[in-house]
Image 1 (cartoon, rainbow, N blue to C red):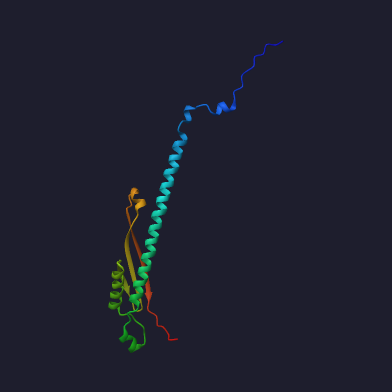
Image 2: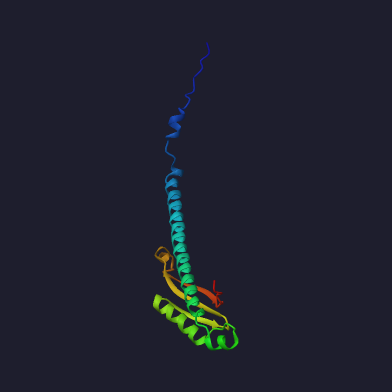
Length: 153
């Protein structure tokens, strides 16, 4: 008979549970990086959403102020020539009064014969981006309105 010694075959389950000093804590570091990236992404989404909402609100105010200004036609010129023209001083004043009544800040960029252009500026707080150095963002929206005659029905 041969004297054969049997080699002990290691148990696969025992090999998996063996502590490996070179991999200790690697999963924890990866999870921390993933959480940090997720928080940064959420902050960017929330901050961007608040800026888009402020821009939409500003555009709505600018449109309404421009419409208020476009209603101020020069009646003397319309009666004399039949052409629809804006009274520049009254149109600008009406637009600025509308902005003041709405609690917004803005300016009238220009009044031509039939068109008025209004710009609304606001500062939007971005609490989610404050930690990254952006506590507020300036949002500017511009809109124009044109005076058009309405034909009676």
